[in-house]
Image (cartoon, rainbow, N blue to C red; front, side, top):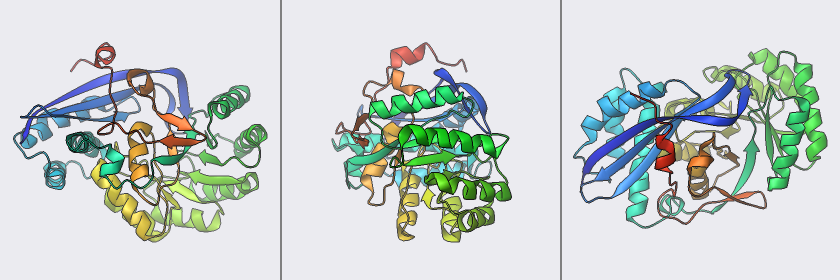
Length: 363
């Protein structure tokens, strides 16, 4: 059997509320880029990636104009070979960035196809370690008022979450500390609390912030500075006194390897939709395991629940669907603070294509 068609689409997904962080500002929509891959026997696999509101058309173009022509008529089960073909096809203009977003969407579709063919949920196909995964709710809430932030936190606890993440990175560190203290009042001392600076700080600012946040019993400090500064992360980890999570803006296996080997990260955080797909996500998880580190995730929780359920060194799943939950048939199941990997064949993400069609972007 072989790949007979690859259909890609670009959709602009409006967010229910305006979201905000320290680097992307206010966000009113996300872009969804989908891939529907079909074989000559009629089997289908679905993959997708997303952006924070820009760049989607370029990713779509790479899929349609550069990757599809070299994948048609290829054997769909030779995933490593197909990944290598895509990587070298775009290597000169890529080595990460938009190119890897495009590769990721196709790679996810290939693995979905493989799991569906074997009539297995993806997490079982990939290793089947434990379908119950620790989960936290990730807020994109830097510019929420204190009352809005506390109200959101209380609602998340009522929904059943037992771990919370909030944004930091305001102009004055004192403002961040006051907001963290206010959330601690809501959740108490025993709920894990993560904070995310979205690369806002210099190394010195991050060290100062980390030391100040220690008294609030922070589970991890996420993206304290730019991902390119490996020595800086090492300093923050050693001098700042908090565990470091980073990786959502790393787009190659080699970036993760350098950060992990240097000792700049406690919780590697690959995003399957932009690190190279399932093929690379698993390799990052295994590199982390070889260094005795847990792996976590970023966004697209409907996919990441399978990946974390597959590996023995899983940490927390970030629960945030970027507004996609309104267009997916089966929402993520949360029980007693745990996300449950579904038993549907493949990754089990079924889009409401008719509803999405109203949001399709012209190309």
